[in-house]
Image 1 (spheres, one colour):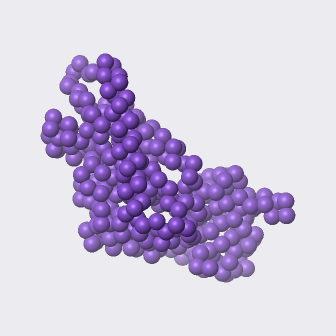
Image 2: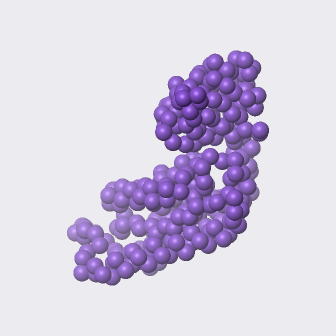
Image 3: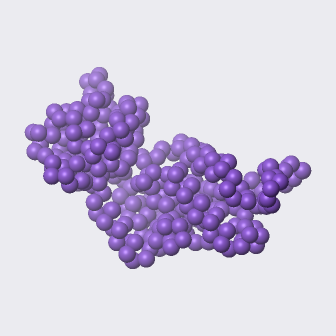
Length: 293
């Protein structure tokens, strides 16, 4: 197999690894087996690996880390961990995917102007390129993929009331919120205007509500800072990708877009039904505008 594979104890001791993983660790096979996984991880990622090992006792998980070679060279990988039971003894299975080529490709995308100048996220062309590559690898990734389509509510009201410069700030704030919500391995993009999308990796189907709630928590935290004369509101639609169906990327985006508009419609109906209630507190020291969905 092209990926590195290992069976480890819950404390990270490598009981078995294949030749591919030994190569990724830059260590002889006989040296790698019996050693601690922590020995091969860059110091800054050791806490992350410990968290992964603890989580993998219960459920599958994944994250990006870097291996550290004896000469100081680092090797970026995605670790996917799953709980296992071997002859009645709890073990953890690990699959390591080398991200060197993917990271190199992402850097090349930047040089090809596939990044949105305002937010620093991938633009539409960049997203379609990277996301399509990821969907091709989907059968080998741990857990299904989720596609989120997000729309910044009330963008026109911000531009019309406060000007396009403030509108740009709102878009940059939204990009920061999406970065805080998602992992480094997730693919985040601004498709154009006030539309954003995220391809989140290593999630389970039940994580759709969790993902939406985590985003809302970040939006609420941003609004609580009160450093803008409006409250950000983001409508989202989230759909899972089934690797077996090989669903086209444009069809997946269309489904998430439809789910997003349904979310926006429900939010608008709530505002209409509660129109006598102020949507948020009025700051007497400055004008605060209401942003419709």
